Image (cartoon, rainbow, N blue to C red):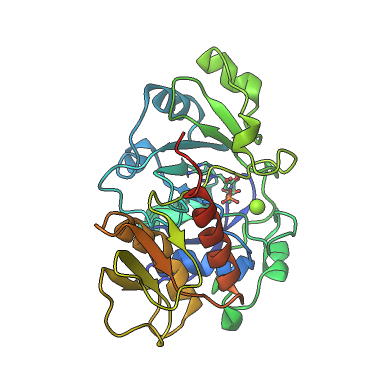
Length: 311
Ligand code: TXA
Ligand code: MG
């Protein structure tokens, strides 16, 4: 089911996860749709061990140290994506880092080993609901398989930790805790010597831990609600009404107007157009329904971000 792009609920030692093949853009887009999230928060990628993680992210000395001590277990490290990283850009929400962890739960590990895939998984609950520590809570919170929910729920009884993993930014020389969780700051400090406080500017809402404010934004200005591209603009189109011929580079999020396809393509297409010769990117309107809300949220943030001076 994972290899075919489906969603599978599985147990970890912290909470049940809503899993998808982390290299499959459409499968990752389905996670957001099933959770009914109005925004794209980056997702944790689950792997078996450090060797697996090394296929996707660059290890810093700090990251290596944390992984040596705390894996497998409830510690997620944020590290730079490798240039040849096969993970969907959606799991990173466009950022050049990925959050990665090796769970210790035997059933979660068996799924990783059998599928031989990195598994993107947020907690298996509808947005705004509690993170599920029981399989039946996950099943009750999410839509059924016919409505875009998980095709399978692997029930292994209650989760042991019951608290999500600690998310640590390990890209620098000091660990920065982005979300407190199963591994305490004291235990991390005992290994690394110190722990830096997260800059409140990096947290969307300091009271809701783990929410990132530092969003991906293209370097080129974005012009939203465009019907066509101006001569010096690239066009990010949507739907069947896109202009047949654009002067500059043009990519269509979904020629058929499918929002899951559009979400799957969003970050990769923004990156591609940002690397084109165009001076700016014109973006056609995307409907404000279902995943369109998350797409528009991210486009608006990107348009705002690209107006701000660098630094
Ligand atoms: O215990 C857990 O961590 C559970 C189980 C299923 O493993 N998973 C979970 O995943 O809570 P999720 O996707 O709900 O949590 C992702 C957290 C968010 O706080 C997000 O902001 C942060 O990790 N995160 C993910 N990628 C990031 C990145 N590239 N940079 C910074 N933070 C990131
Ligand atoms: Mg959650």
